[in-house]
Image (cartoon, one colour):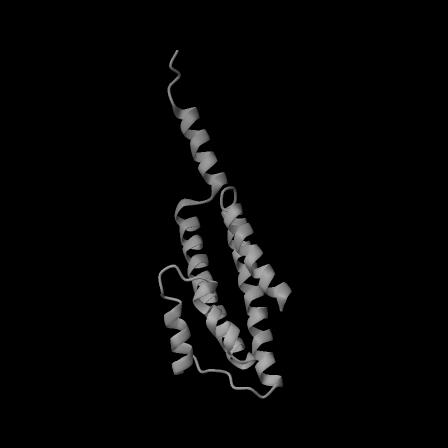
Length: 142
């Protein structure tokens, strides 16, 4: 579980860094992050299932409460600390599941936007080719 969580975070960071040079790499790494979070989600679901603990419905009052917390300005771990430190493991697992779903939704939106931008604008190679062609087509100032 720890490795899946770490991999998700690291691939988001690496994808963001890659965006400076390669839209293709950015999209691939963001998708790898998404896959890592899916693995983590399955781990938390398995944790509940093998212990015969309840999995919150996405529209349950508990899940809705967690989703509302995510809309607070300046949301961070501190937003959830009290809940994580004072609730039983099944509640913590359900909170994590809610947060993973939120992160996956946002990553899906980000990938869709990156793909749209790539189709519209191309990537770094296309921009460099355009600049090179524009440079060639400029009249020689001599």
